[in-house]
Amino acid sequence: MAVGTTRGKRRLGRWLRPIVERSGLKADDIADRAICSDQTVMRLLSGRALPSLHRFTTILGVVGATDDERERGLRLYRVADADTATIQHADHLSVKYLRFRMDEVEATRERSLDTVIVPGILQTPEYAEAISHSRRRLERSPGWEERAGDERRDRQALLRRNENPLHLHVLIHEAALRQVIGSPEIMAAQLDHLLTMGELPNVVVQVVPFTFGAHGAMTGPMFLMSFPEDDEPDSAYAESVTGMDTIEKPEDVAGLSDTWDAIASRAPSAEQSAEIIRSAREEVAGT
Image (cartoon, rainbow, N blue to C red; front, top):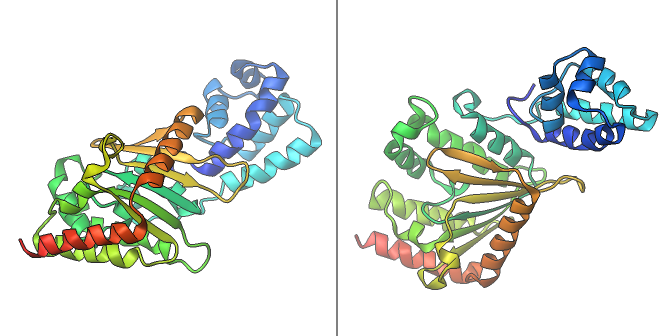
C-alpha cells in the first residue's frame, strides 16, 4: 500500500463525505455502529488512510450508501489501495515530499514557480548534489547528497516516458540563473541542460526577469499539478527550507493558480526566455 496520503485515498474520502453528510451521522456515531475507532473514520474521510475492505463496506452500510454508490465506492477503494507510484529512494524521503513525488508521477501537467534555484525536475545531477551538499543539515536523511542526482534523474524520466509524458511549464526567476551553484562549470552545464530540456515539446520554460516588478518578487517555490480525471482538483504545494507543504484549501489552490497564470501571461515567451538563459550562460562562462 502507498505510504502517506495518496490521490486515490483523498479521492475516496472526498467522494464519501457527501454521503456521510446526507446520513446525518457524526464520526463517532459511524464508529460506534461500524465497531471501529473515531480515528479510523476520520482518516478515511480525510484521505490519510484506508480501513480494511471489510470495515469500509461496513461503513458504507452504516451511512446508507445505495447499491450504485456501494459499487462506485468499491471501485474507488481498489484504486486507493493500489500503489501505482514507484519512487526511487522512497525510504529516504520525508512523508510530505513523498506525497508530492507520488502526485507528480500521476500528474498530466505540472506548473511551477521558483525564485531561488532551478526547479528540481530540471536540475542536472551535479547541480542537485551541490544544492544538497549546501543544505546537508536540513536534508531528508544522512548521505542524501549522494542520492540527490539519482532522485532528479528519476523525476526527469517523467518528461520522457513513452505513455502520457508529463507536461511541464516552469517559471524561473532570473536570479536563479545568475546565482552560481557548485562551480562555474556546474552552473554552465545546468544552464545548457535547461536550454536542452526547453526544446522538448512537452516542456515550457519562462524566465521571470529582474525588471518584472512585484510579481517577480513573489516567494516560492510553488507547484501546481493537474490530473487526468475530470473530478480530480489540482494539487498545490509550497516549499520552504523545512520541506514541502500541501495547500489544502480549494480557495488557496485557486488563488495560487490565478497568480501563476498572471505571471506566465506577462513573462517573456519561451523563445525570449531562452535568450535570457543564453546570456546568463555567457556570463557564467566568463567568470
